[in-house]
Amino acid sequence: MKLSPHLSFNGQCQEAMEFYQRCFGGKIQSMLTYGNAPMSERVPPEWRGKILHATLAVGQSILYAADAQPGQYQPPKGFSVTIGVPDAAEAERIFRELSEGGAVQMPLQKTFWAIRFGVLVDRFAIPWEVNCPGAAE
Image 1 (tube, rainbow, N blue to C red):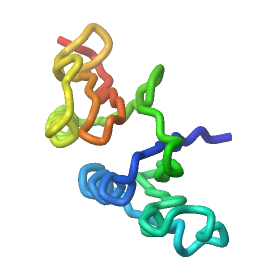
Image 2: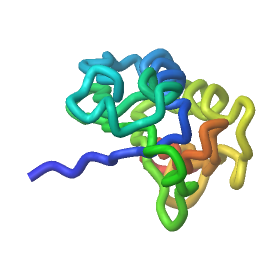
Image 3: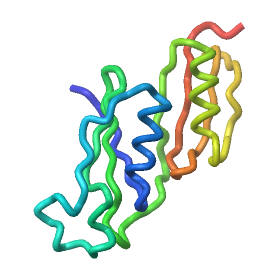
């Protein structure tokens, strides 16, 4: 069994997934628009270029995403997507990139459980935790 997050966006899914691909060094495997799906007639014409289903492979993980249908988007609440990064410098780079245009809730820092840990909400309203485990000094 494998758990994979599915993120919802309010029309910025393609931009977000392309950003995450660059930030995490992953590869977009699919990006299906509403206009190329059998349900294309059920969405307004201006929404047909939005993303119905996207997948991004990052290492052994898959990040799924889509633009919510018009009028159905709700900002994420009650969870964070946690990224485990083995290297402190890489954790700092990822945290810095994710936080651009977003809101840092806890700066990236040493904790009693990690060399680096920080919490933020990115410019796409997605909550992230960046964790670089190891013995904190």
